[in-house]
Amino acid sequence: MATLPQLIEEDVQHLDKSLREFISQTDATAALIIDKGGFLIAHHGDDSQFDMTTIGALASGAFMANQTIAGLVNESNFNSVYQQGEKYSMLVVNVDEYCLIITIFDAAIGVGVMKYYVAGTIKQVAEALATARNRNPDGGVDLSMLNLADTQSVFRKREGE
Image (cartoon, rainbow, N blue to C red; front, top):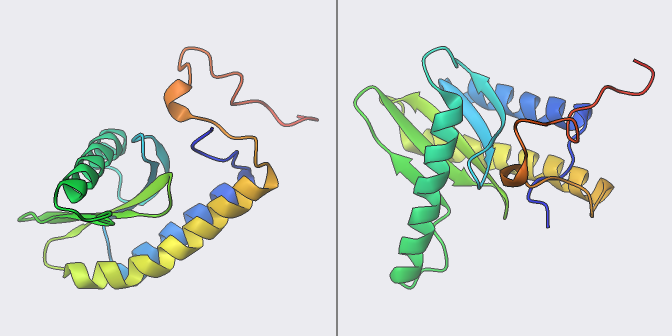
């Protein structure tokens, strides 16, 4: 089964709007939506100082490692991972069975603020992904199976262009 529903332009705009609102509410430095394989789906904020692709991949791995730890301590799941730093902190939160939201924010901002506001963003992102999935339940893509040398099956011009 595909991990990511087929996203159309309106879906991507909705995801971008959700991230933009979240950044505005929290003063976070950056926010990313990734699939659990670590592939970047959308991001907003200051991407000039961070390698978003690598952060997405590593944060996904950290989140999945924590899910394994949850099982070892008889917890059904840990829904977030918090990394506290001197300059920046990072919160990785589960959206649904396929996606995560990563927030990078100034270490002086409390994680409670991020958790409070990310809850609404998670709801918006989950709804947008569910809408896309319901539009074509059998469609979608497993980004880990994507042949980066030949992306023609994924990226096509719209008809009439």
